[in-house]
Length: 55
Image (cartoon, rainbow, N blue to C red; front, side, top):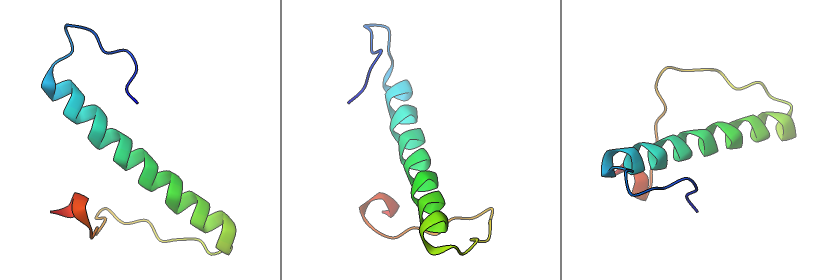
């Protein structure tokens, strides 16, 4: 679901919003994994990803 779209919203803004959404979801998932496992995950500048988004 995307909220706040107007006639002035550009394709570039839509793509950026989608990419930012994936990044925030990934961060949320990693934080939840830390909470559930009790293991502090190492932070890295590079995130390796596999799956349809990585293509």
